[in-house]
Image (cartoon, rainbow, N blue to C red; front, side):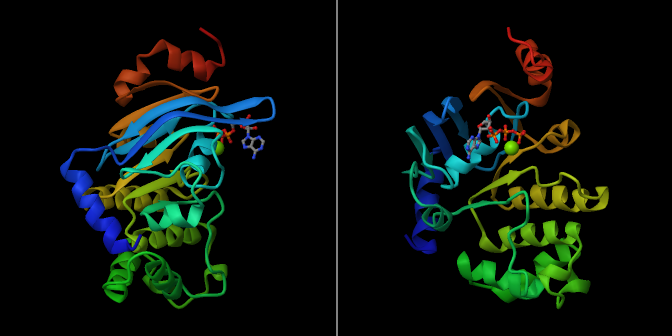
Length: 253
Ligand SMILES: Nc1ncnc2c1ncn2[C@@H]1O[C@H](COP(=O)(O)OP(=O)(O)OP(=O)(O)O)[C@@H](O)[C@H]1O
Ligand SMILES: [Mg+2]
């Protein structure tokens, strides 16, 4: 499907009030470990949803299944109305899904500007040069616009990876611990950009260990433990939930 077709399909889906992401009965096993054990969840359009849970609870596996890095054993992943379960990663990306990686995926020998323009070419090209200017301003990358990605600081590389997502104009953006280990200034820039993009129509699903960040930006939180969704709610609701506390303390109910 072309980006234009994906966009008109999105308009129709928005009108029907359909969730942007609906996962049903998703399973994936690695040998004896069931990393996704009948996962069911929904992300609605325009939401910022946080995904939390103890180490090894299956959060990154879920993102890998949604983005097409892994194939599920069974289950359905409806993205903007299309079942993408088992589809190849590049096809899912073309339908309007973007994700970040723990180690930023950049064109190392290309400049900041070139990296941004290349991302627009992968997603939506219209207005690319103007949009690259806006992204560089938003992410404070103007001073290093002609520097090669490989010569940037780690924090600037994270900002550039985020800029590439902005340029793609994705419908749904998956962020896996995007602010882990970055300076508070850069974290603030990324958080402000998330809120701004959401206000412009993007939807975010983000894995995060920092509860302060989760509290400040997420509309809703989904909690996983041992490959399953154990609860969903606002930050205050889940903070009162004893099952969640048990999951974090590593005890079983
Ligand atoms: N490619 C793989 N091969 C084998 N086992 C895997 C693979 N990917 C994940 N697992 C296993 O699946 C389980 C869930 O791992 P996952 O990385 O999804 O957890 P997580 O919730 O993201 O944890 P963390 O908070 O530490 O990042 C773990 O037991 C992990 O060892
Ligand atoms: Mg993980």
